[in-house]
Image (cartoon, rainbow, N blue to C red; front, side):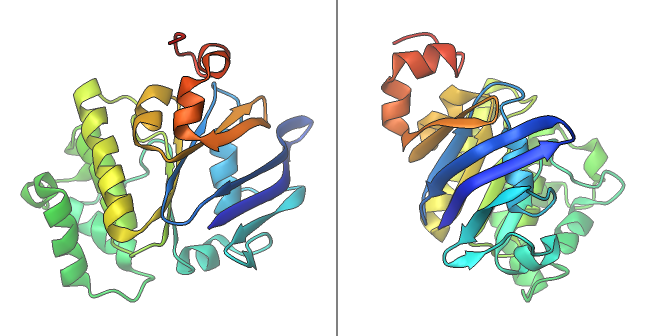
Length: 236
């Protein structure tokens, strides 16, 4: 379980997160939703220690992550797929996957084979440079590179960004399948609220750095005021 308590993050005079508190239950998908500038990406970057909070706590089960180094948090089983995928274009698919396993005790051949079973198109593209892949294929590679480390927590930042609706549907469906088959705890940041709520168990809505709602995803999807004013979705 990920538990965030009274988290405050600033960039100079700009307050990015204001006393944010919520829980992401174990083995479930928690969507983090809100408009651009709401603090969604900052939240994930703070959990993985790429941003230092001014105050507050972040727990992985009973362990406080605040003050730990990013690599130490990764070794605890927290994998972060950043906005924009973060794959290395000059590396092949194979090389990107090997990079994901470099600091973790995994059997490389078995790990790569497992990701190729999950994403067969990557097996076909294994010798291609990542820069030559389509946007959907790069997103698959980013998820596969994270999953090869066998994480227990997966932080996903805007996995649908720039993708066609059909590719978005397929990526989201795969995330749901991963959560169920691997008992993953998933924290999913998404601008596309409709796609995120389709697969999420819970949802936290951020507005200008403040958590204004943390509820089961079905309740958020049914709340017309949240849908219309904070998520950019028409009322049901």
